[in-house]
Image 1 (cartoon, one colour):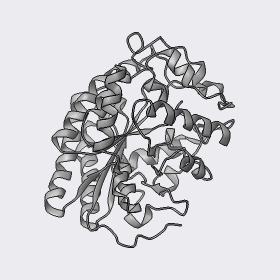
Image 2: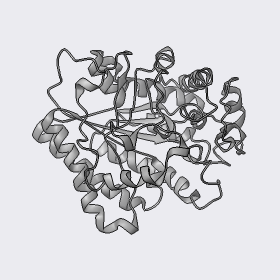
Image 3: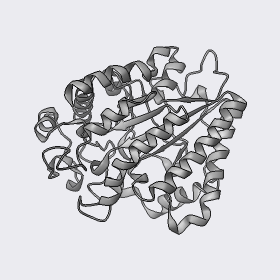
Image 4: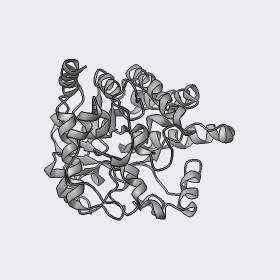
Length: 354
């Protein structure tokens, strides 16, 4: 069920969100010193280049950031951690058991204060939350109380840097219906929901089988899930929150699928052009660590995508918006965009810390 806008915007929009998590998002899959380490370290080099590309094309983006990454030290992280924590049935998911270094200087996979500060220095970049501890809302052992405590810690550690969290991206896209009031109590106004097709529905890790993952991969090259355009009238939910749902994941470059790159670009470009023509939204997302390997190829592909958007901006008046920017338009509160002014405040706060 959706609520209808009194006046639909007469333009389409490209929304970009990035799930900024480093090793916290993969710790149950890869060891810090394992084969994926170079991708994670590469993400630290890719982020400034992504930001430069966004600035070149005048792109707004939402960086959904794990709260742990804000901490300047292990002490600050521990002091900022909630007292109530999830008791996952799968103990591999417990992030509080992860051994880490003392700070970003000796552990660049678990701290990222300097990178967050750099993001805030660029125009039109929204810092959102990816929860405090990369919290899993669909895993057995989590509770509403633990989620509320986790989200409170995420909002608090961002606020100490002058950042007001307005948007959330659920780790592994595990949105949980019934938690909307928790989001509202924390000051969150919008979230990134999943695509409305069975293969993209929120589910625990145990149900992420090959029968689910294979169709998702294929859907990036041929249309299995239908239109990728999000209609403005779908955004506002009965809860009062805005669901700025995903259109497509930007898969990283693969040498094995190199011959399919033109097809992948055509699929994304078609979605952007359809959103421009239909005055809808195309929401593209990925992780910075997806660009950690084959960085040049991934940045070149992103440039091609942004060139398509630039063309649509000229021909159809398409706009680039953050998630909070969409929520601000839908709710009629333009000040909720959270792009330029909050970043200036955040930059000042970071200057006092760093």
